[in-house]
Length: 521
Image: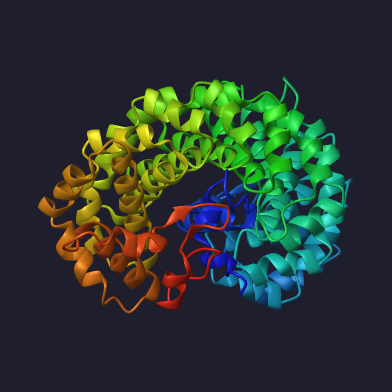
């Protein structure tokens, strides 16, 4: 019977199941809130200037209190001054996600603003139209799609080559808003040729505020999954991204670091392209950043890379990233703690030498400390990191956990409600007891578990409604905590980390255990 991908515990181990999709699933689970927060932040990235009464344009005072019928009449006028006045007034109306945006769209004005984008003889009208379109495109999905349906994208791409730097920046801003809406519109913008003119604008002499807009737009071109941007596009933008990652402006660097987060949130091929670009040392140095948004982006980018192949993980280790994790693990920011624990869990899912690097870097005590935190999401990721170590490490490496006091926090976590994590915890305890047997310390470790209240909790878990939880709890009680010598009777129930997962013998399967491919959650 095939094992469900979502339920195959061992496939989170890079050196076991090698199931990249399962590893990405765990990444997706963690990224939801970060992506939501980043999306909310990016939705605010627009021209957010409320035009005050009496605002002036190049042609004089602007009437900003026009009603929609007056706007329609003036925008369709043959008088260039009236059209500019009305367009500027419309731009003012659609600022700050005004409810009037839908009224402007319903009045059929977007095609006129798109038409004005090509009025090269009236640069102010071009600029005000581009600004208005930018604000509309920063709104809801239907509003952004309305801009696209009005035919704005091809013209905005052409405006990236304008000799007017203001117009170039405004076009990039509008295209960034459209690309940020989702993968469909991002790919539509890409197909319309945004990349070559966009990266050609990234020059040393460009004004800083313009460069920030270009960096943000470039990040949105790399953004989104299902599907991810085409690989050929990533290869085109990587040189510019690598260059901007070394910029002195923190806003530019933060945007580009998020771009690297998006690129590395994909296949091993994409991760390898980033590693080959030579930016790992820079990303690692950024793990000391004081700016929270920059720091969490750097941690996430590094974490994405270690979730790739063992070779890619090794590249992160050799770049010195582990030197910073102990400090990051003690951060007051729970998001940082969770990211660090998740990153370490992917390293402890690697090779035994890589696990030893984690131990040598002094990361076992911080991991155990994170198990004791009050934040469940941090505890969960730390539990995965510890259990990955017990499954893939040597017996000596596993006993290092015991020597640093892992038993008590592990046992306390058995009271959580998440069945998946309970199985992870029980599996880790089983591996620890197995390692203890190699050093004649089973009785000692079993006593530690009992004194921590673990035995009582494991006994209760034998009646858990989740069959996997109940079975592993039953195995542990029979194997290590029942009266008399039950080892021969239950030897075939002992979970072994192998190619398919924590595997059980025939007796376990007959008792309703998960199949030999791994736990079914």
